[in-house]
Figure 1: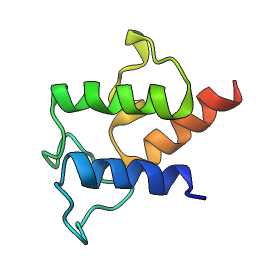
Figure 2 (figure 1 turned 120 degrees about the horizontal axis):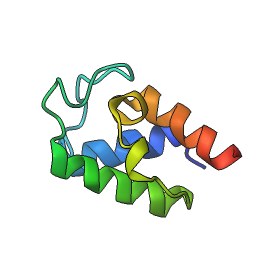
Figure 3 (figure 1 turned 90 degrees about the vertical axis):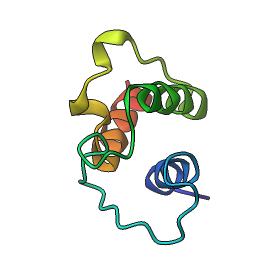
Figure 4 (figure 1 turned 180 degrees about the vertical axis):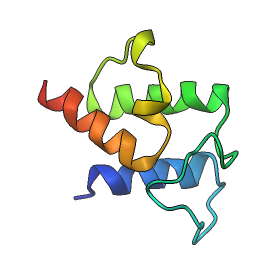
Length: 83
């Protein structure tokens, strides 16, 4: 069974890094600053998170504090799932 971290990283690798085998992406890297995702990518990411973890992400939570790095997404998903 994969962890939230593994699932999110794999989604990013498959959809934004196009399957690069060993991307140099730390869990704290800003996905926006690194140019990995753009505004359309954020929407894809939100759709993935909502579907995968059966959560709802309202517009006011679409902020870098929640979604700009793997670690921030892990913490955000954990808060939403446990709420």
